[in-house]
Length: 365
Image 1 (cartoon, rainbow, N blue to C red):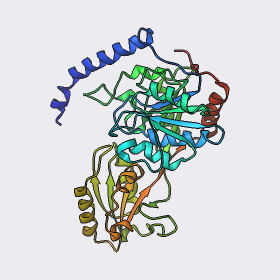
Image 2: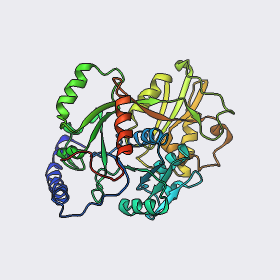
Image 3: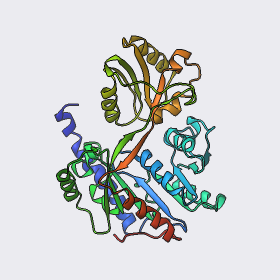
Image 4: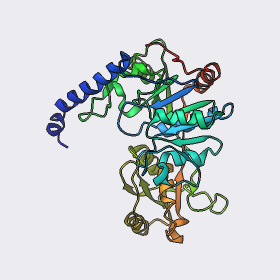
């Protein structure tokens, strides 16, 4: 899209901003109702289109909280085939549950993972059917103002800070940047692990956080690759010690594959990137394309690497040839808090859950 074509979208962004602003005004003025619940509810979300790292941060919170509390994760289940309430288990399918909820359910079998397009009804169903649950994590629900969470966590990508973005469709913002004031915690995600103190201070100044808001920085952590079609004990971990001898077909269906691609390029000299849209539903022709790309690799060591989110979808293609099955790996990703702020963040979260028997706001706006 040319700059001129892009600029022509600016008037539409003004209209979109007015509509979302009026909607938020109705909620702020309590003209539209927003439900609160007698259980701690933590919302993890953003105000931009695309990947800011919601799932890894939701998983971080799940792992943190399930050590002390009985945790439920509630998601919309984007692009699944139904809208009804459903408890997600390891045996669920992507069509029934959505890729991200299924990933979380398989990763955390001790947590309750549920999907419901109507988050309010979903919370009510969890409270009624699972009274043992002590905290609910709302995945990607910052804009779902039918619910007033007890604690709101807003994510902003380091590479495109919300303060430097514009409203849709001219930019990527789903609502005005002023709405970051609704967040109790702001996390700048995908930050460089070696971010300079001066960079950090400039961003802190730019965010201009209110006294009640806490600002943290996290970076992406790539864990050891795991084979997709077999157990860990059967296949050895891929050998990336010699990038000049290594070729990779990278398969991504996520909003922002750039960080992963850059990481893969550090461990392999030959990279074929098959890029699909976010939450893409793979088809047989895509499996064929992956096989053809794998055959084109000239390196003596060849692998097919995909994301953890895409792995739950690709795993349903059990007819992939044995040669390809033994070459397919995925990289589980996590988050690391920078500047020794992990303990501070963990305490903030666990203290909120422990102290809040009712779902009251942590801050006043």
